[in-house]
Length: 174
Ligand code: NI
View 1 (cartoon, rainbow, N blue to C red):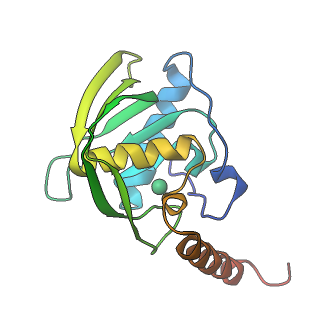
View 2: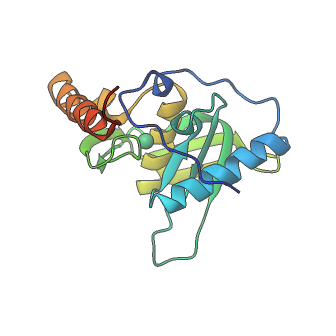
């Protein structure tokens, strides 16, 4: 397993559309393991492949909470089959937009089909935080960030601040 650097917005690598995998082979499985380790190390509850610069449709989530036993879910090619008519508003954050949060409204529950870490086709139903998290990570696979769901005013403010802090963090003289 390996810790991977997480790409911070704004960055064109976060805006790509990912490609589905044919199957979860050793390389995709390695990617899932590395992403999970990176996510836990960063104290996140979800991570999508573009956030570490990979173009495959792979996400990992674990919404069990710090006190509970880990419940990692690794998904390749996730696809939403059904959404509830009821919505759920939740304050979202993202490892690629550190220290910024905004309320996003999404369907309250979803049914998702995906390939698991053993390349088996699975379906799960999710609601609450898990549903939020899966939908947020799936957005990343289409180049969509949570700020794309909020007003342009708020989005631009957040992205401007991130750009500024990236500049400050860059080595001097470049
Ligand atoms: Ni995110």
